[in-house]
Image (cartoon, rainbow, N blue to C red; front, top):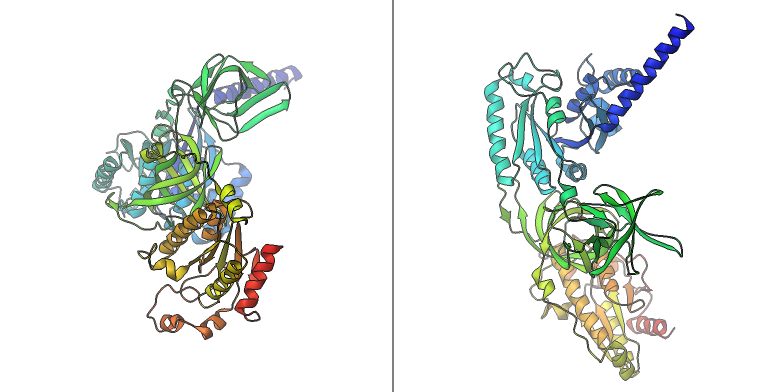
Length: 633
């Protein structure tokens, strides 16, 4: 080929590549998930989409052929599921554990697909993948039909705001391409979807393993006249009306490069905003007008949902990370008490009264579940009574927050209506939640200003109020030491009150048993009483086993810095059992007492107590003097 011909050919290739890239840049992106029960074929389906779309590089194909011989289940054939199952444990067990995200594109659309776990143990990972998806491909094994995990995943999709479902009835080759089998499953799922509010459901019979009705139409099922799975994904319109919603900008960062500029940066969650428009900052309701809109180094007259911007205001008002800047004429709700739908994702139970961290948009506040109003049965969709939520259960809960947050109902705005709960001790994300509405009771309760406060009461008593929290096993000597200490404090002219675990259970907490949930509520109530007594200016001695770190930390957070003193009465279990002053260990060993701390119920020892008392070497009086010395220091 002549040099000029080679140059022309090279130019044509360059132009065709540029044209292709230009066309691709104009395509919209569909985020969807695949979900369903174990072995329904989710990973195989995604592998088939990638393989048949010619989106696998040569080195990937060779690696796939090698892995198929090593791990695969298809004999000498390529095991397409291995394209997605990346973890060694997944390949060895043949199941999906983590959420795997894959990108691919066709001439009609770009896709980001999340392959989510089917095993019940990993439902929390499935919820993570569903939280950003616009469409769900729910696979059903044609041999098994709609099963429990199909229902559970469908419920989660409905709760998370996914309104488009593609029901992929897979493994039709295993039922001899039987039309009746497909239609029975289609009818069964349609009835269930209607009950949970999934209105846009489309069904496709296919074989991910063989490729039938995935990209190409199947010759084995001439009775099916609808589009293939890929055609449906390319054509379906899942465009949301987020731009038409009221303007919401959760503030992620206060941008202050110098004294002349103060901007509020974040990604617009919904709506549009323009220069000169009136906004309100929630919670609080402070108002101003938009002065400038900056994106990168450029300034714009307006911006819409999905754009990351920095806006400045025409006057100085207090705006912090976690606040929500909203249209002044259409503001979100603000409250510190809400009802929400909660998907519990931890192996440890959700216990009402336990304090968690709640993160919504960019704001983190303390939160506790005050009431579980019901647990949703994924079989019947009925609301059952429940005292706790277990792993993968879905409940309707009332939550009380440490501070007001701005939010929309999740059904109106998925971004500002969603949250996660985080365990304060382990920092594990334990739940995903969707806010239903703010509770009216929060609007009827306000702090009443008083003239006589804790400082005045403490000055009158000439002492520094403290909560002295004694924790340890039954029989460790907590109550004996607390009693001796109160005598010493009284002799020194101090004003005190002793809250003892057994005594309080005769009155205030007589309705509580010894389950984990009741133990949490026991400490929550005692913490509130101790806080009131602290406010009265007293030195409060609290002697409770209080077995869980989370609840002791909750009480610490209720009061000011240095006002909570944790005293660990550190006595080994065998010593406590040998003492057994009330005969409780003997009865527990005989099976007469259930949930006994130290035996069949755990005790979580303090990790950083202010004071530790070893009662194997200290008498009660000596231990009390140690506490007095600590307070004097």
